[in-house]
Length: 229
Image (cartoon, rainbow, N blue to C red; front, side):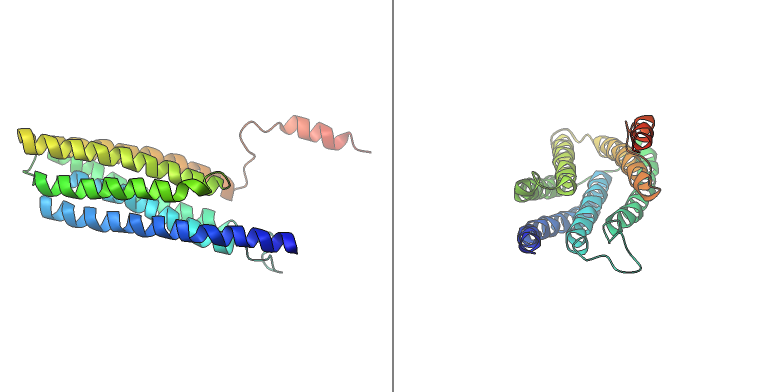
């Protein structure tokens, strides 16, 4: 009983970190959507979708950290841990649909790039970059004890890199009026969203249909069981 209580306190201690990272990412998404609409930057909106997916993942992690601690009952004898996977499938499916839309829009604008307000794009990207870094720093202490949080933190690191790309695009717009960089970045970010979303969706679906882990030695497991009298 004492062990369970101590584990509960350790879990509780991590909630605020996930909550802070979630709020920071929601702030990034709001800033990028507003900035994308004001500046006309589709790349900012694409990056907002990417950050939105991670905000949703952090929300799932935040809820799962609480729900996973619920005791099994007569109807759910294996507990509630798989709630996280179900939510992940929903989030990832939505992400892929939006990624496809942004890809189509980005390809269309490659042939007719529109002017983009570089200053707004630069300021919003800089804000997003700082908030991404803060999110990574806030979550880092939890990465050693949680695979879930470690994967979420890795996604935030990738977000930071994509924000750097948008910052570079904003500089190209401001210095050289190179408006083609915006749809180019949109297409690249969209392709990354689709790759990342499809890969994660496959993993989540594998959990739901109870697939054996990769590299699992089925013949060895069968032989071990049959060897028991």
